[in-house]
Amino acid sequence: MSLHQQPELKKAILGLPQQEKDKLLVRLISKDRMLMKQLHFQLLEDESDLEERIETVHRQLVRLVNQITEHIPNENQRGHADELMKALKFGSGLVNEHVAITKDKMSELQLRLFLVSQSFTHFDRLFEPHLYGRNDRLLKYQAGRIKHILGKYEKLHEDLQFEFREELNETLAFAHRSGIKPYIEELGLPKEV
Image 1 (cartoon, rainbow, N blue to C red):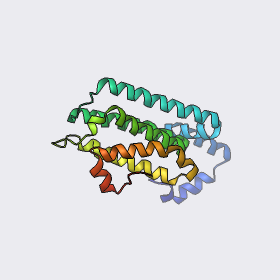
Image 2: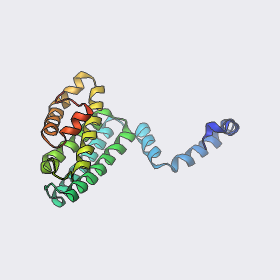
Image 3: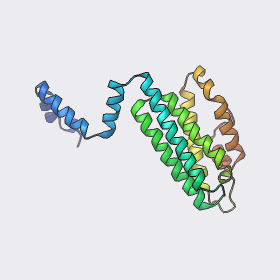
Image 4: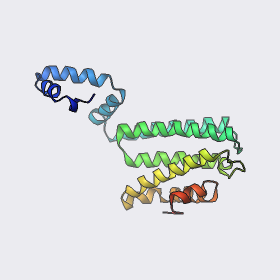
């Protein structure tokens, strides 16, 4: 039940002495791990900490890519495509957490584009059309990721877009040459930006 649905409770809480409200606030914050991370970032960190956070997530993604290239063969089979998609979703989760904490749009685009382009580089055969459609879920997933990246890209200032244009165009070119093409076309995504 929301606090807005109980106006009497809200009024009573706001009427508490400041010391009591502070105690309640600290108790509530300690129960929400993500809120604690967000507040730590907002209140105690600066620009150098943001760079460190970006580098940490980037290292985690590099480690993830290295692990999956060792364990998932670059052969277009259903099990391999599903394993890759599971790993990509895990990597996307790392980026999601980073963004939830920092709200940094540049690093979000950088990290998401890195993950997609690395999957294309190391697993190009998994993105080829499959006679029985065994990798359709992966192809559709990556088309969605590209659409998401393009949405973030378009919201950036033109000067900032320049930093990502080449890598994004390479990603789009690969997608249009691969089995992702029908999904990209269905979403109405461009061949280049």
